[in-house]
Image 1 (spheres, protein in one colour):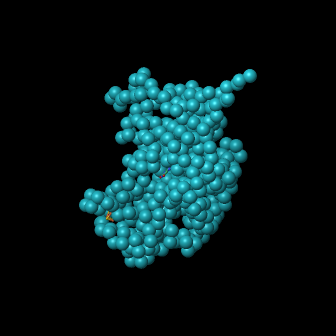
Image 2 (image 1 turned 135 degrees about the horizontal axis):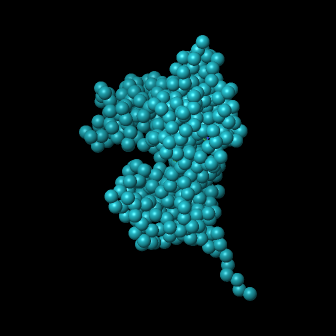
Image 3 (image 1 turned 180 degrees about the horizontal axis):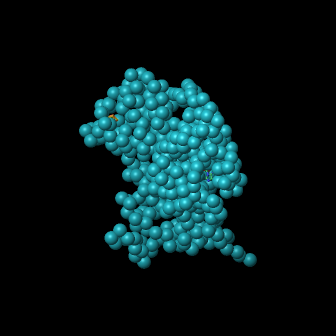
Length: 453
Ligand SMILES: Cc1cc2nc3c(=O)[nH]c(=O)nc-3n(C[C@H](O)[C@H](O)[C@H](O)COP(=O)(O)OP(=O)(O)OC[C@H]3O[C@@H](n4cnc5c(N)ncnc54)[C@H](O)[C@@H]3O)c2cc1C
Ligand code: SF4
């Protein structure tokens, strides 16, 4: 009897050689040599009222640290950076500098090339971290104890500042490793050589912070219990949930959340062992979508299409990231929205998309469709605060689906602060989360001082 052979997904490991994978995942912006750093520092005008500094969410004194590098004092430069941003090493690697400090640099207008502030920041912070020296000593112990929930950029920054000020901190995280999206989300080629964990180790070396991984708020600990046993609580729990496409067929196993897939990729010991489709479609227009698409190509996918429902100018991914995707062979298809995931016997075959247009800012489906063949589909259409509804039990008041805070990052619950991606109105950038953590720590510190008998 002749049976039709089952359709198999064209998803395979080791599409590229180890040498090709090494090349594709190599550091995207290699470090400057000390000589190149000195030459680059010389290009700075050390502007009075420097616009680059205003554009940095953490307010780093950029002209000062560049002058310190120019004077041959990279350790002093690192101290200047770390005093405002203890994750200055990661931010030097992942910040969209073209939209922040470098986008504001006056040399951009004069010569069409800004001072390479990000690389100079990396030069200084790498130099300091290589010495293993902590630039800050802890203040005398205050006897106060703060719980920080979430060991991502917001929680780490908050914990470090509180520890510096002499408070004891317990840092809880549901995952097995600290770092948040620095460890599980950021594209591999932005933070090579286990930088996220090295940075966490460096930060924790200030002392006074005890780390408790594998501990989830809502499962192992409650806000009520934390409030009862600590003098203050900071929530830096990020966005654990992801939005669904809401179309037929999206439950197929190879129609996956991009964030989840990137986390698997980031933790893979051997990239060659990670299966990837020959044809991949990524749905979305933000940083996560670009990172998933570029890394799918880097693993050896032959055709990668990023499908976005509006025009390029509406994409959350910056122009730089869009160009990076295009340079790495990703096709960007705009004005299409998903209609149906096509699969056969559970095996993804492709996706049906509907063309869209905008009318007065409103998105309208035109009814015209097209089909893209695909072995794997990654969904990257935004994240939400909670992974499951029960996780929300006991959280402070929300606004627009995230935790509502005041100007000092206090939540609706007394003694509980929050910051980073989990709060309303944030920038959803590493550097913004670091700033929130720092500001919340200063507010907690002031509150604890006020309460002192
Ligand atoms: C794929 C991807 C790529 C990105 N790339 C960039 C980039 O290149 N540049 C950039 O500036 N930004 C980037 N971002 C955004 C940036 O990573 C985030 O803005 C930043 O990590 C937010 O920090 P956070 O501390 O608020 O949250 P997170 O980094 O998400 O950390 C939250 C932590 O809380 C923990 N947690 C969650 N729920 C619980 C719970 N119930 N109990 C205990 N712990 C909990 C999590 O395990 C996690 O460790 C990217 C984001 C994604 C998804
Ligand atoms: S704007 Fe540019 S030139 Fe001016 S201080 Fe900043 S980095 Fe230097």
